Image 1 (cartoon, rainbow, N blue to C red):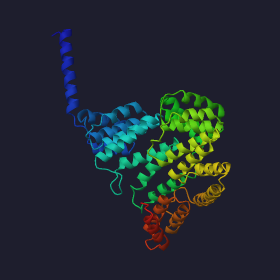
Image 2 (image 1 turned 90 degrees about the vertical axis):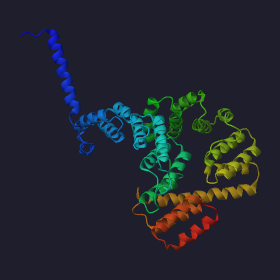
Image 3 (image 1 turned 135 degrees about the vertical axis):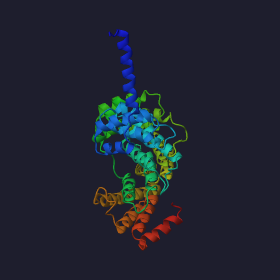
Image 4 (image 1 turned 180 degrees about the vertical axis):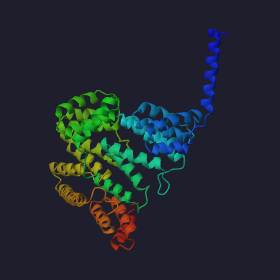
Length: 423
């Protein structure tokens, strides 16, 4: 019996349908089995098994997360990102998926997208019941806050970094070693700055990958200034000055550049773009704006206006060393000897206390959470209180009492600070 081409075609189609049916009906591995493959780093077998699994269970958020992890480990970031985005909006794994999206954006040097993903992960996590209060913050919230803190510090966005670090600190138990490490980072925030050369090496690829992200370029301008790279700083400042953007970080970097280069016109023109009253929520940022306005008035010999601006800056953020120092010098130039003596005493006391605190922290191990004693926490609280850093002082004394509830000095300090309204 002869078979025509038509018969062979029909037979082939039947066979293909049979094979497809056999493949589909063949039992897929259990998710627990696939999880073991992932734990064993058997990426190829895990990929094949998970791809089959998610074809049959396309809305399984946990399986999609695992598959995205496998793709990432195999170097396929685009497939990993696409897989994470397929996690359903209502899935309990959505916040974790969005956090992982941020990690992939960060690996691709896209800091703006990473920031937005981590912020979204926090919102999703809170909406699912994980707030930022102690004993209830969910893992995605804590992970995202930690990543945002690192990002803001790298971008010289200290106000936001401080806010996020306080959220993190208040989210962990006082007995947790992480509480010590977080509070130490908060305390050192006023003492140390990112190494400019390391920051430049990390941020230049980010600027190339995401040229529209002005926050990265604004941070680069500050680092070029600190690293003594005037040509690169000048070129970048001209580019940023031509931008129509209204980012406060952009304004801050430009004014700082003009102050350092002595460009009086640049300072005045940039400050003219700011609202009459600073609208930023952080007092430290608003203090910085008034300090810059004081510098502007002083440059043009307007000493009374400069004094008013510096006083306002100090009132908003008393720990600002620049505002206090400039107020002292402006008072001297204006012949206000009493105010000058008062301010110069504040400047000298602050410098002395900063030096003592820096030396104390410098003697500690890098991550002292497990080793710091109640007495050391108390001493750090006393050093912060001497600087009038009351929130940090209160927190250190709370950590001291968490380690030794009978530590009398911290008990008294806690009562004293609470009477001053510090919480």
